[in-house]
Length: 163
Image 1 (tube, rainbow, N blue to C red):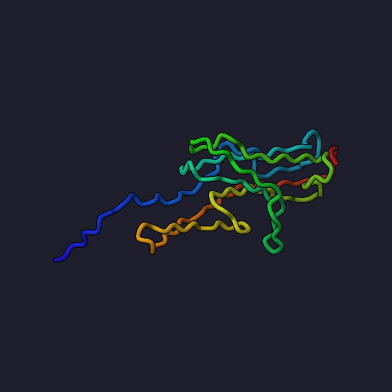
Image 2 (cartoon, one colour):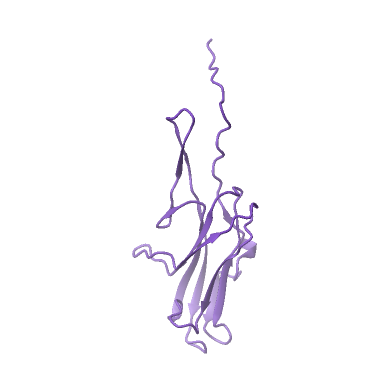
């Protein structure tokens, strides 16, 4: 019986693995924040710590405020995370919101959605773009998926001492 004796000419490229948000280090730890704007609760820092086993991936964190998929707006802020050669990136991606600042984005009373969207590839809207790699035979394209992970907080802003 004939045998396929095609030899492996090089080590195949490792498939992309998804990043993850380290849930135990998310700030604020509670995803539901009540009474933002009363007492001394006039400012909040939202932050995430991210890990990716593919240490060479460029990770970005996009912050979205009150995202509506029926009327999509761009990210409020985008932060690239520095590559430190370790799976857990050394930087925290932080978004600071202060109700005493002019035009504070969460100043309208009511419930707001704050999201950290982490990606290891280019995004179109909020969707990851897969990366194609042509292998040595020149005709085979291996599609390496991109990944997105999110963390969300629900913030209820009330009229109080800060507004």
